Length: 184
Length: 113
Image (cartoon, rainbow over all chains, first blue to last red; front, side, top):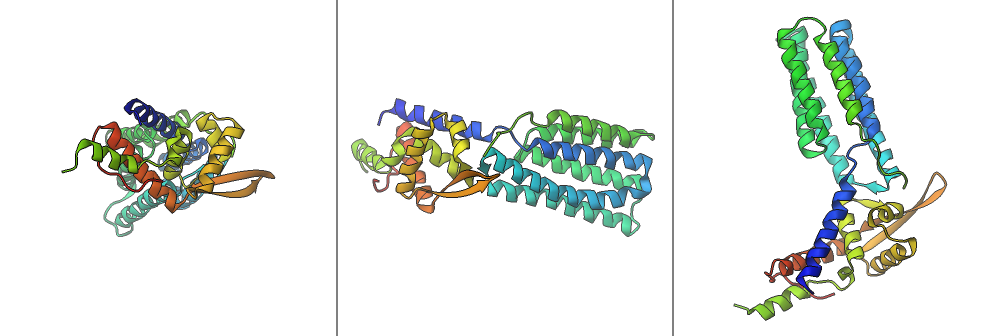
């Protein structure tokens, strides 16, 4: 077997692997979280008393719906990846657990109001950053938007969370992949 | 210490005849990275005709390297392919031997297939 043939075959296989990995996460998941983030973040400024309830429902429900949308998209695309699915579940459910643990700080009276929101946005920003490292590079930018929102919340008083929610919405909608495989 | 000739022969031993065809090699590498891939997706990724792709998949299936599961999605038949344990083993040995040969450092060969 010639070295040229071998190198050509290795290059061919590498190209195939890269093509199969193109596309990232389903666009419907980006859009789902764009709306959840827009409402959830804006509520910190507009309806602070209902933020906890909203995220307690929207967080886990959004996670389950994302799993369903991801699976449906994979079936339509014709490419299933159980290992990646398990990684996503561990990553995002882990983040939800740590958010719930942060909420304990408020429940036990150690922190209140906006400070809790700031702690949570830091956890979420870090979660999206690590998701950007491991799953989809677009998430790094979304994490950066959250970090900017966190910094803004340290210095500004009014409508910081509404602004962050709008920026998150725009970032997620813009980064939603335009096209993914069309049929099984 | 073995001479270059015997080391090359040893590495060549890891080369699988069935995986020497680049389309079949590509199919097995993709299946080693994803739990299942449909016929249509393979066609899209590999750019092969239905007939050629079907023939290559059948050869891999007959060799026991991959398996197929057929189901209906929206009333359309879909064939899902997955790699078998045997397929993973043969692919791993084949890739190891290929890399050894490509790097000019053969020495990891196993039995021939």
